[in-house]
Length: 134
Image (cartoon, rainbow, N blue to C red; front, side, top):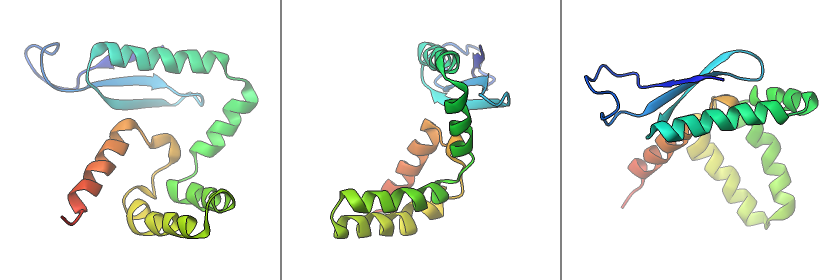
């Protein structure tokens, strides 16, 4: 199924403030790690969720996810934005495109979609909060 651990050298790892990391094999069979789980229960819950998803997923859906996961955030945004223009006002779509060009793509645009984890999103949001002008 996978494993969870704390990558620290604390003498009492259960009581230390460091986050848990999980290690598992994704649908292609390659080993992956995700970090940022505050409790052991959260790490085990995520591993259980990954295992259940893998068991119930059809082969065609798994292949589609693999292909999508190999795209970068920027590549996906290029296909996603035109679809949003059909559902939103022109000015909103224009603002979205501007945000992608100026804020999202320079920071995480080159990341593969399957490598965007909760920790990556939190780091990105922290980056945005640090660059705002007050």
